[in-house]
Amino acid sequence: MSLKIEYAAVARCTPEHVWRVFEKIELWPRWDPSAIREVRWLSGEPWTKGAKFEIAMLKPMAFTLTPEVVEAEPPVYVHLLGKGSGVTGEQHYIFKWMPETKSTEVRTLQEFSGGPILFLGSSLKPGIEAGIQHMFGRVIEEAEALAREEAAAPPGEG
Image (tube, rainbow, N blue to C red):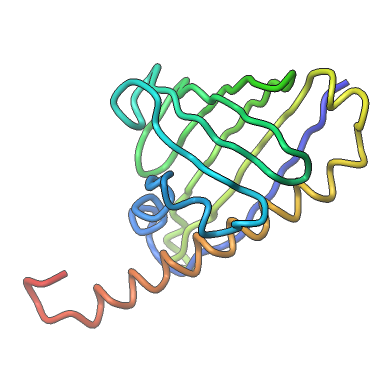
């Protein structure tokens, strides 16, 4: 059994603005300190194939994952595969520009498997979904603020 999650939201800014916020993994805990204890790069050049980082989670249960970058096409796509604490997680993050609305669809597809997922199953899903929704909300908030700051800056300063 695996746990599958899909979530999408819209940011009123470009994929580049979203990426500039998302790529700073060491800042991820500030988006939800009750759920993410620490995130840090372990090896490789950040956001390149084979690079690894560690994310220590507190919710929906305490566990540590070590995702590896399977594929990255900044600023529009990242595919991660992580293992740790008996859990395997595969995540896709897609930041798609929508020219008709001058906005970016921020989407994730995630799948988790392993003993803890088999044992706790669907009881974990609402907590994981809430965490993703909260994280995306904060990423979008910061990316939109960045876009507004750059739009307001005098030419040559943005």
